[in-house]
Length: 121
Image 1 (cartoon, rainbow, N blue to C red):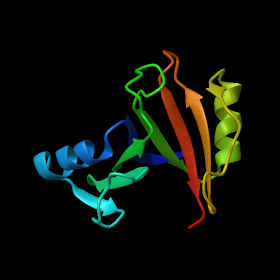
Image 2: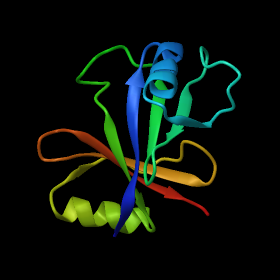
Image 3: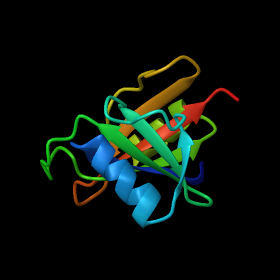
């Protein structure tokens, strides 16, 4: 059902500061977008090996709302969602944030957020 840990999403307030930290201090390579300035970027991806680190704009430092989120790649999001619901896992409805992808957010037993991601390859 789960293929791999796909990405970890950090919700950030100051994109420039966070990109500078992860790129220049931690030494990660920006995967997307091109390095033309990140102040107004809403989504910046870093290569980390087998997983992608994403900085997601719009965070306000609220640990309850801006807690980092793991994202798992699945080959059949509907079946994966239904399986987790059958195991009493809280799962939201499936939505499509961009063409060719589907996402479904859920909560683990301690309330930490995660998502299932499907992408049309």
